[in-house]
Length: 145
Image (cartoon, rainbow, N blue to C red; front, side):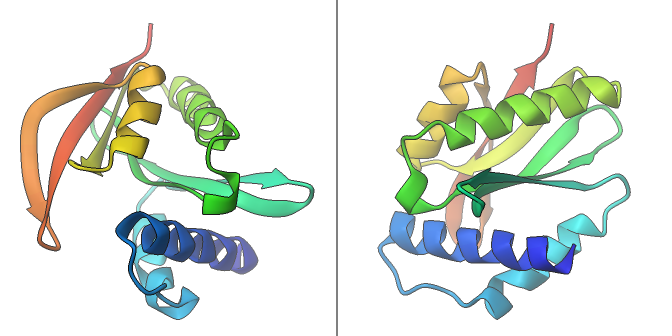
């Protein structure tokens, strides 16, 4: 599991740096946040691979009424290849498996690329917003049928 966490942390660091046009964080800087969410009861890490290389991941954990997506990231080299959509389908299936029919996540309000992926997958923005690390985030929900 430690190797998968390091792979996920690297993906997160590269995706965040590309999205924000900022210097890339190190794996060591991004690992604690991933480990914190993985320590939640029932948390799961899903890695997407292409040609044996990790190119995306999702990290989820059950809440009392929902399944929350804490992380969804795709390596910038794989953007546009459907990795995010495939991960969201895997998250949907996991939610069904554990008996959750509502999923939730928070996304940076100006992250148009991610919002487009979520909306195409059936996620709907709510009116709920919060500020995290100085950035406005919007809550999205997805109801499985």
